[in-house]
Each structure stands twice: as structure tokens, then as C-alpha cells.
Length: 88
Image (cartoon, rainbow, N blue to C red; front, top):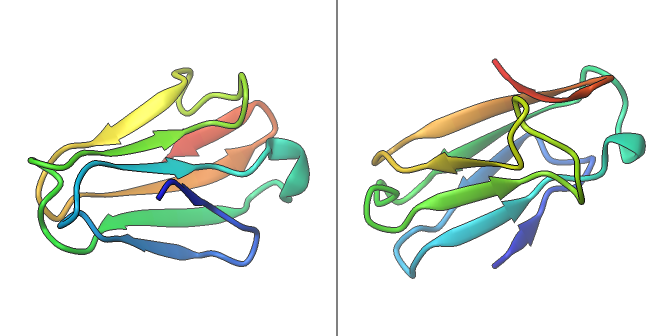
């Protein structure tokens, strides 16, 4: 870690047993509108070892630079829209 999401990813299962994790989203220009990916706490430990999802550069996730998963077993689904990443 950190893990870089690629255009082939649809589900990213995050190992939270070893500590806090960072997931980097791809640049908006590198993926089609409508691209979706789900980030999942695979080890049910995100309350202790948070998962931070970061936009590329200045790109945002629901108008913030980051989104944090901090609940055990938590998951976030993101979709690319022309103006940024949106949680759905």
C-alpha cells in the first residue's frame, strides 16, 4: 500500500489487518464517464485501521480531496462523473 486503482478494477478488497491503508483513484481523464469501483474493508478492521481514498491531484470525491472508510466492514462505491468522483 498505497494501492492505485486501475481501469480494470471493479472491486478493491482492502487488507486492513496490517495498518491504515491509502487507495489512490485514477485520474478522471484516464477513465470513461460512468466508470465504477467499490472499495471494501475485507478484514473488518477499518474502525482501527482506516482506509483513506484519495482523488488524483486536485480531483475530488464528493467535493472533498479524500473519503475515509472508518467502520468495520465498510465499503464505498464511486462513480466517475464529468466533474469528479461521486459516491453512490
